[in-house]
Length: 316
Image 1 (cartoon, one colour):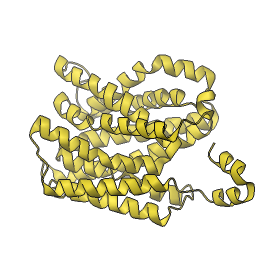
Image 2 (image 1 turned 90 degrees about the vertical axis):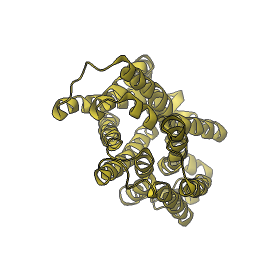
Image 3 (image 1 turned 45 degrees about the horizontal axis):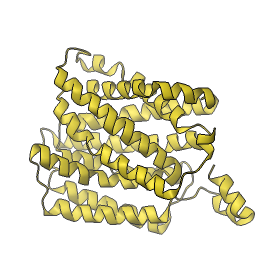
Image 4 (image 1 turned 180 degrees about the horizontal axis):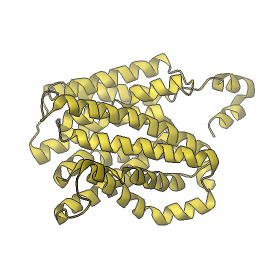
């Protein structure tokens, strides 16, 4: 329970977030290099990640077991994560890396809307400005690439679905961990749930589960270890301590890293629009991160009534 109650230094959380962003930036390149069907890549990615984390997950589950509301919320979060990866990885087969990653990282828009309408956490004006600037920058990055790929309209729609699913994943996961469940107990369990949700997908898509080249499997293993175990676990850690809106807005910086890697590996050199969009994304990210997470209904009243102690209770 100590893991769930102790709060790390804010500088540490930001360092973890930065490392997570670097890690997830490798995802699109690894997926392209794997050259395997999207349902198989998504399933293997999450199955391998859950197996790697299994010992830590079992130890953590003994300390902070998942029961009742936390258990079914984790299953729901796993479903959202499964939808996110199934749709986003599929989008890379139909549109460019820049367009796919850009549209998939519009998650903050969906996070802010869900936080507002479902949780009652109305965003402040500065948060909305930051989100708007960041999304505008992401749109500029992808503008020149939206006509690329074999079926860009389908690819773009899949990437937008992935963004909405990621918002649900961030919000539900934060609720679980704020209820006292440790990060180690949560992430391994939610990855396992996502793998279970994805298990029938290759069969439904008519693609084989086995028989892929060792090179493809090697890239999928790297995909599971770097963007998933390091990247997404770091994002969950950041979402718990910084908030879902802040974390998902910071993820808008991912197209910059993915664009640089795509240029190095595939020769997709970013142009002036990409550079301009990158500046806007970073400005929006900085504004949202400096502002912080929007508060739920009643949270501000609780802080005014209870002072610092009330604020501490609101954040646990």
